[in-house]
Each structure stands twice: as structure tokens, then as C-alpha cells.
Length: 193
Image 1 (cartoon, rainbow, N blue to C red):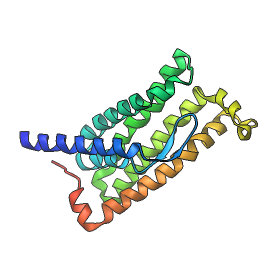
Image 2: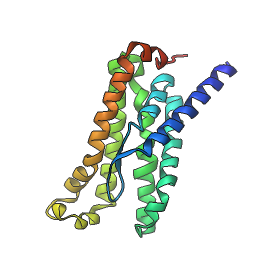
Image 3: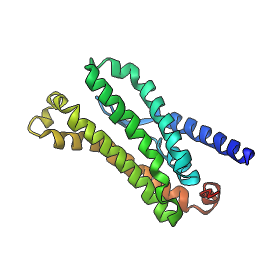
Image 4: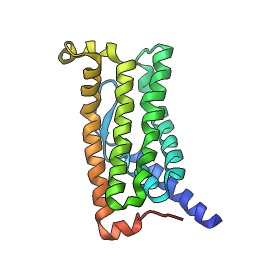
């Protein structure tokens, strides 16, 4: 039993490290935060699929903290009020990245359920960023000429959709490939112990 937990802990640490490394490979980078990465959320989703929410949520929470601290230098240049900084910390980092740990919510429903879990978790992440955009970042739409005539919710939907929709699509496709390839499927099969 102790060896099993140690193996899971080591696997979680490796997946967390892989997620962090992949998060630095940015394909699209938005000016006020957000980016499309090279499947950086997939390793966290795999932890949740393999070992359930009991392991997925804490690993995702750690990922959220690391994402926050690695972005802190850039965030500090934005001259945010303390209220916006606190709200952004919670909605754009802690909540947004921790919900990735919910990817294993349908893990017992086969590959289709597991892929649905990934898509659901990432959609919840998008929703967290969308709420942040509506509550905290509406005034920033003035920096974009294309957004001047948009309402704050539409601006938030467009801004966050530019990077989150590709991220959701690519990560879900990555999960499908990972979970449907027979040899890889054996390696990443859920652990129901």
C-alpha cells in the first residue's frame, strides 16, 4: 500500500513537471495574459483520469500556484489595484487551473467519458477566465480598437476565447489520441485501486 502511494506520488510529480515545462512553450500569447500552450494541461488531466479527483485536484492546485508565481513578474508590471490583483489571483490562476483536476470526473465511463471529462474541465477553466474578464478586466477593452463597441461580456468571451478555444480543442484531441492509442492506453489506463 505504501509503495503504491509512493509510485502515484512520483508519477504525479513527473506529470506536474511535464505540465510546467509544456506551459513555457507558448504558441499564441495574449497581451494581458493567457496563451495557447503545447498541451500543458494534458499531463494534469492524465493524473486525474488515472488516479481520480483525490489526486487530480491537489496536483492541479499545485499547478495553479506554479502558474501564478511564474507569471507574477509580468503581472506586477500591470499596475493593478489590490482588489483586482486578489480577484485575478483567484479567478485567473487558483480556480482556473485547479478545475483541470476535475478531468477525471467521468473516468469510469471509458475513453469517451474520459475525453468528455477533459473537455468539461477545460471549459470550466474558460468559464473562470470569462468571469474574471467580466468582473475585473472590462476596462481593458479600451486598449483594443476592435473591442470599443463590444459589451464587457462579449469582450471577455472574445478575448478569452482567442486562446482558450484552441487550448480546449488541442488538449481534447491530445487526450483522444493518448487514450485511444492501444499501447499508450495501457500506460495511462485509469487506476481504480
